[in-house]
Amino acid sequence: MATDGPTGTLLRDISPRFTGDVALNPTIDFIAGTIAGMSSLVVGFPFDTVKVRFQSPAIASKYHSTFNAIATIVREERFIGLYKGITSPLATVALMNGLVFASYRFLLKLQLPDAACVPTLAQIALAGAGCGIVSSIVTTPTELIKIRQQALLTPTTARQVAWQIFRENGVRGLYRGLPVTALRDCGYGAYFAAYEATCRYFSSPPPSAGTNILAEVESQLTQLSWPALLLAGGIAGIAGWVVTFPLDVVKTRVQGSQPMLVPVSESTGPRGGVSPSSGSSSSPGGVSGRGGLHKTRLHEGTPLIKGMGHPLPGGNENGKVAAKTKMRDVNPYRSTWSTIVHSYRNEGMAVFWRGLSPTLIRAIPVNMVTFAMFEAVVHTLS
Image 1 (cartoon, rainbow, N blue to C red):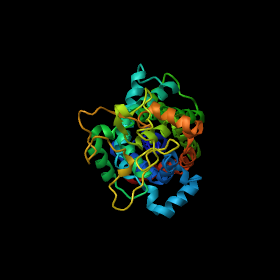
Image 2: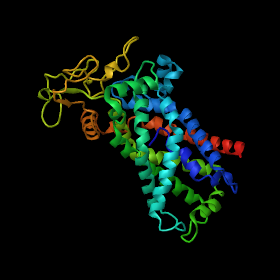
Image 3: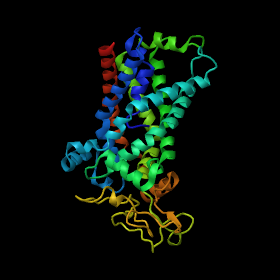
């Protein structure tokens, strides 16, 4: 799922819950959903930064708890340190909302024989999972830039990080971690299904098969109280994250690292590990002794992300490898499966839930701000 989930999009999808019998202008609908999404992102982003720090093995040991991490980041990097990497997701909020909303409705309609049918929770979950896969086209580069910024302990900009990635690996580099991002974003299915299930539980009467779904939604959902809506949003957020959180940990590790290329003769066996001669060191740019990411040791004047990549043997100073040298990526976080295996072997099953606490904590303020902001914008512009 995206940084704070599809809350803003979902509000636009079920806007009658908040506006009663007043029909929304599509422009107002879009503006309200986008502003609500941006507001929730700003409120919840410090917790997202803490989550990423917990999931990055090279720096996770610095922090002991969610609020200790917040205090440490503020003390060492000032308050702005909590908002490293927020630029890229802020810039794509509108695009993400539109893409998730459109693909969700399209995929839902594909499953219904006609507009009079009320979708089952399974159909809603399937449409949600599908729209998550579609949205990964935007989510992958957005979160790649965000994670790289959040994992660095020195000031950077989204533009610098994006340009560095593009210069070294091209467009393909910006889509590092696409498969695991798509798998993680299938959590939209659990999000939409949990939200709808909770709303149906508090709605009376339940939807009937012979009623137009939009009319049914408008007639029922105006009965829901604010506590019920907030509870539905909270349950949806928790369900969406719990179902796919281990994949989020894997995604952070894949996107937070870069290829570590060595000549084929220097790599070992079918598992692609580094041989003793090639060095599994814990020096800057190497792999930490307990399976961590390449340690980043940046100082003033050091080129951006210099320490995050492994030197490319046989290449020039810009990291370009000689065309005739066959190289092999031995980064333990080079793929979804290799990351799962390496993380489990070195840190156990608990590693796949690292950072869950700040993620669940932020669900409360994020949902409250999203609902309130959507309502305020709609009433202001209507």
